[in-house]
Amino acid sequence: MKETLERWLSDEITGWSMGSFGAICEFIRWPGDAPALPADRNAGWFTPRGGIRFDRTEGLTALAWDMPSTKSERFFRHVEFLLPEAEALVPQCKGLTEIGVDEDAIRPEDRDMIIFDGGLEQKNVRFCVRTRDPELIAELRANEGRGYFDPQNSASAMILGKHPHRVSLTAAGRVEVYQKIGGPDTGWKSPDGPHTHLLPKLLAAGRTHSANTPIPEGFLPVASLHPASPFSLPDGTERPFCKATWRHYAELMDAHRSAEVTALRASLAGGATHDSGGPVIDADELPEGSVPPQGRHLRHAARVWDLERKLASAG
Image (cartoon, rainbow, N blue to C red; front, side, top):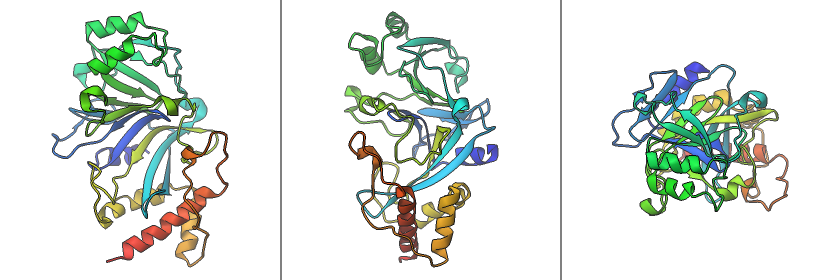
């Protein structure tokens, strides 16, 4: 797994994230940026906008999965890196909690900064802020023990105004974001490249990952690889289907799909048929308490296989 991670961490068009359902840090190289630099510890890279580092590779399992878009004849691809649940768990702090000096920061120049756990109580990630700003440090300390979204937590507003580093810590490593927080200072848009999402509505679901992600029982995601889209540019601009980008990840996806999906795709390639019709079910949009239909992951996988064959043979 170490070789796989190192191979794709060095790939300039591949994105990464570490987080939970509603609290996530993303690392993306941005066109025109200075080349990323390798971390001086373990497997990782950083740019002036953010960084990623894996501190653990032993025991990680990769799971590749595809899902058709609910809105168009397109599809998404992902690779999740998993650990057994007992090994993926991280400390869960109730309310803001000072961790201390972040001597494990990716960049040496950040290793004097103070890092605070945001107190979101997520099983598979500690979503943190990091700073050396004395005013913000004092405010964070004054609000220790208060929930991030507690109306009495005056540190939350200061965080939004001072834009400290955000850091996701998992059992596998960390993602750091150095850019501004999407909010009043950015026109409520996430900045280009590395950025964070902190979404109370999703956090309220109490899930470690999207219901669309076919994580096997007994495992938790600790990192995600996001293949570049063959349908759009990094800024979201749509483009005709790019076969080169699609093929770029073919070997990675084929090597790490589940045994069920691998067998399904092999049977389809051999001429078998499978029901891939009907609506694409976005389980995250189902009413609370609803149970997603059984077999939808295989039906979605068959739909993606059909789309790939059609798009690859066009033109």
